[in-house]
Length: 370
Ligand code: NAD
Image (tube, rainbow, N blue to C red):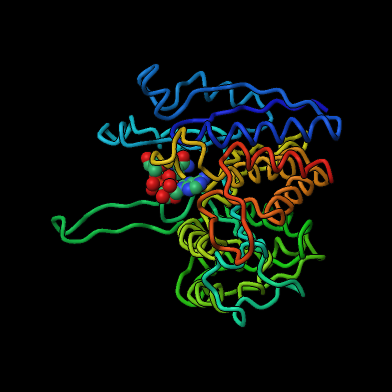
């Protein structure tokens, strides 16, 4: 098959980590008989410098013509003093809105080789369905709720309000993305809310009870968000897929990412609904920013970007075996002791500290075995 991928490598370490991710995609293509065609596009600080705006209309239109978008990171100190509408990060909001992606997938898994990077004690870390550590996926609603609800000031500026508002359809569509993901994982889905207090959360539960009927193979449970925040550090191995609102997902996904070690390890996907051909639009990006301190120094960890490319294979192209090969090669490179600087000294065994490029080459080497 042939797939067209929009590439926005962006600013800072964006190009450093997207380069190895593209090499991995090409190697997957060679091995499994797919062709990936890339369309390189500008957004973020580079676009501000070139054409005076963070998301040129031509970039958005070109991304819409592609099968998926792989993005590095945008932003940096040289654009920090610009007015809000010209800030590089504004490009991200424009891309999300323009592509209609509403479900943010943030997996957080602990590679056993990075045990030392997880702040939890052994007895807390426990088991995830028989395996040490945890492997969970937070699905955060991305385009509704408190961050988009009515807001304002009143009483002569002495009070302020924000509104948590969700429609049945908004809740249903993000739950369906979560259920679809659960089907290819451990088939457990937990709806995280505050239904003991919030009316909007009670609607989440009503919708979930209906949507769940279409997914009888998945076990559905419910948890209050305050308990969930605690359970993530008391027993993260109990979770498979968690689906939650924009606000709760924002907070819980950062909490979960801190359990998995370095920010450089973690991928993400932002997905829309399948179109009439079954194609799922997606933006795939590592969760880290542009890390200007590391830009161009061949020290950034490229594994988050590589794993994001793996998520693209799984969720936009339906290439499960190929996605597994990418995670397998990442695990193998960690087994072999290769570590970028951010992971150094966290495994308690012999390590070889390598740069961005060598880490990417290590993944390519081990991809041969899958
Ligand atoms: P950051 O994620 O760029 O960096 C935080 C820390 O993590 C830094 O110490 C950095 O060196 C380290 N780090 C990040 N990625 C790493 C990697 N791959 N390997 C090793 N170490 C890594 O966050 P920040 O410093 O708050 O933001 C820097 C810039 O990035 C800002 O302009 C911010 O607005 C932007 N940003 C962009 C995105 C995005 O494009 N999605 C996300 C977050 C921040």
